[in-house]
Length: 245
Length: 100
Image (tube, rainbow over all chains, first blue to last red; front, side, top):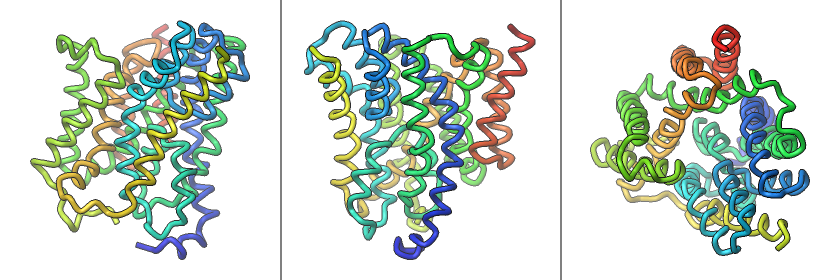
């Protein structure tokens, strides 16, 4: 793997690559944040507040929960706790990301990269080979985070600016991206392929399992992630030579 | 209470969740189990979030399922992020012209 200093020379190219891969994220974000904006409006936020909240938090479920509680005039402690629970999966993602950072990378990048550990930017960043180049994430964030914030504002201003057909079509952009991240490795690695099938099955089944189905979506994602990743790690521990360095 | 205070709290909690692991874990984790665990986390979490959610995201379940199948197919064939996402969107758009 190339050390950070050498990769730095390619930084502009990598930034551009990140921006390109940020476009489908931006499309998906527009559609999702639009409906988030409607929730924000119901909670009494104006378009500037929705913009700021989305620009800073970049978290769909976490923001949604926060807005709902703002609408209910909850206490700050309640908002903090609910945000923590709804966003807890980012703890796992940040842990996974920490293992892919070059120890020689200037430390301030860690503070900047933490701003946009979203499902999508995490997903496309981790899908790349070798140490993560922060410029790739910055490029993706520069294109997609404004779309997320603007979409929220638009949702507050006018819930129905985009035709329903387009919203529906855009809404699968994020999932299409997730597939582009998980399927190619599954083609090369049978363990990952099998794991994805198990994930799909259990994730589907979890809608019908008593008690479990009453948990929030974020909570279910965390439980399934911890459970299935642990099982996979126990049964198929990663071999040293498979390390993704 | 001002909405800005609420937003500040939301931001603070969300940022801390992301920044603490990223700054506190500075070296390679040696523990084999935890290493393998973190290796599988991205695949599991993205897979769990994709299905069945994709089938509920669209106006019609059929177009959502079609987007899933087409997305898996073109990703398997090697389409990149942008093309896979776009193919899924186009699949939904065209199917819903007939379905709805």
